[in-house]
Length: 86
Image (cartoon, rainbow, N blue to C red; front, side, top):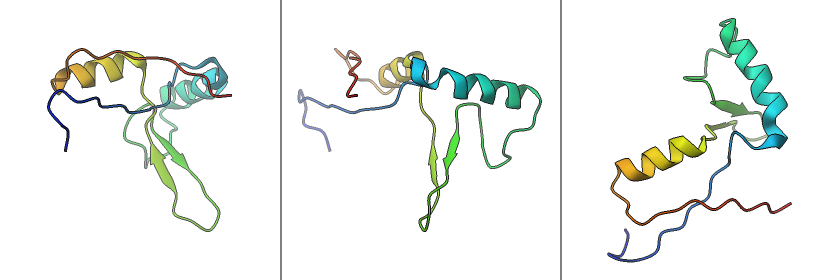
């Protein structure tokens, strides 16, 4: 539940981060040949394999996707800020 007029902060990964360019270039090639893992629903989806735990599913967004989603659900006065923690 959000407080009216309150502050809402969330974090997300940026699929366009230079650190991930090689991965997404390779994934685009796989998808263009229709050879992607059939458990994936759309380009940008990931399945992260973990030892002795359930696999994780993720979909890192592009900045435009985040902006569109936030606007669509009615948030006002929002902005994105890139923070490099490493």
